[in-house]
Amino acid sequence: MTGPALYERLAIVGCGLIGSSVARAARARGVVGSITVYDTSAAVRERVIALGLADAVCADPCESVQDADVVIFATPPLAIGPAAAAVAAHLKPGATVTDVGSVKGAVADAFALVMPTDVFVIPGHPIAGTEKSGPDAGFATLFDGRWAILTPRTRGDAPYQAALDRLTRFWEALGSKVELMDERHHDLVLAVTSHLPHLIAYNIVGTADDLQEVTRGEVIKFSAGGFRDFTRIAASDPIMWRDVFLANKDAVLEVLGRFNEDLQALSRAIRWGDGDKLEEFFTRTRSIRKGVIDAGQETAEPDFGRHRND
Image (cartoon, rainbow, N blue to C red; front, side, top):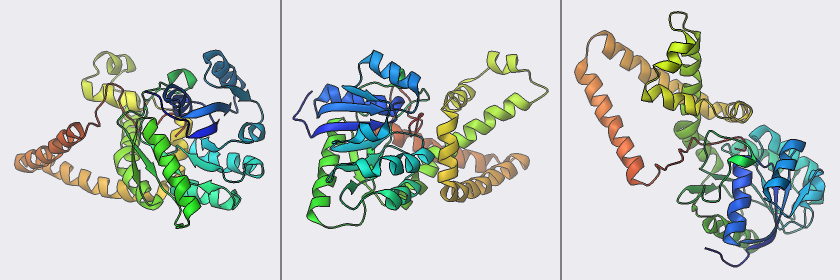
């Protein structure tokens, strides 16, 4: 399905899984006139050229954003601030500036420090991704049926509202359902639904690797479905997830504290043979899985909250 171009020129800063998927989807849906890509990696830039993902690929970030109507930062979270600072003076007045990271409070703060007043800053987060990374990992249908959260500034002026409406229609054209949210609330929600699950996955896989009584060969050979799922999540990009936990540490630590309390309660139930407690808890959590499926949030490509460019 194609539609009228919402933006004449799209600039993507960072072209991993999400950045390359945005480029593919925007081109497939006909919602931009042209696409310019910048990435710090020369190898990634060469691959973007080989894949034909963009009309122009720049080695200079400032050149990549010139005359762009919308600029999407698709780098790891802690790289967004420095990248934004580097290009801020070269943005076209009236351009929309957004991102795709799974942490919004730190990104909003970083944008506020460097962005000129004549651009429209609307942080964003498409909740879609796989454990894979790099420009080859992207695909045009990644956002179909997935939520895209926008965390606009508290501004009521008509030009900003028009920019917000335009960006909303852009994500909808890429296949997403759009939700508006306060950035701090977003970070708490994602700490529960994405960040803590990743931390648990990294930890359990690391624990299994450290067990002296179980060899790595046995861990791989006898992996049951649950552990296989953990290893898939734990294969996510380490740089991006390092940034997520550092940038969203307050919300993650808050949720982690509650998780540890609940884990201790389960530990006591197991120790004292409290089968009723375990069954009640497992029955309650089983219903959450049904809700995820009923909401259409289970897909052939698992959503692990992010990839390299989150």
